[in-house]
Length: 133
Image 1 (spheres, helix red, strand yellow):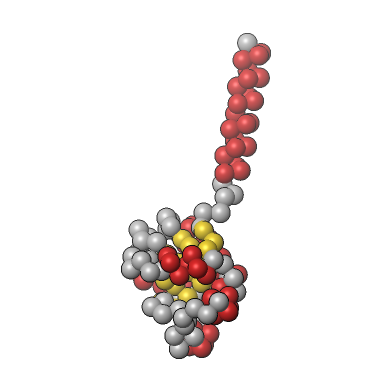
Image 2: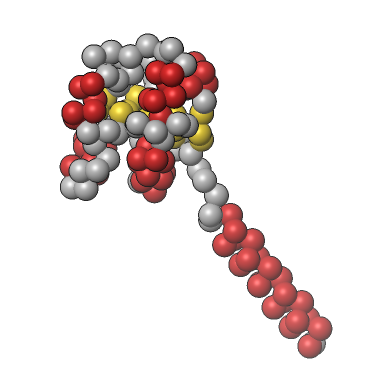
């Protein structure tokens, strides 16, 4: 009886530990500029620039939608109004930091497929990829 109880406790603790570890997985995918460029050729992708309006005006990836992640009240509202949770979302910013924050937010909101441009538009431009002003 005691062996059974110890076994049950071991299995319970082990299962809880495994569950806790899986909850810390990053559920969005970081992409290189080349991978991101290929991805956004798909017309089903929702391309979002999460920088400020001023930054967006200086140059952005063509066909991107500008939703400023730093606008704490406006960003969640815009996400709810403008984006479809059932479609993949590709996000980018200047260097990749803000877009990672946005990607994490989108995952928490229930978006299934979220992609982040690693190293941001700075790397995109450095590699000679197209921007629009």
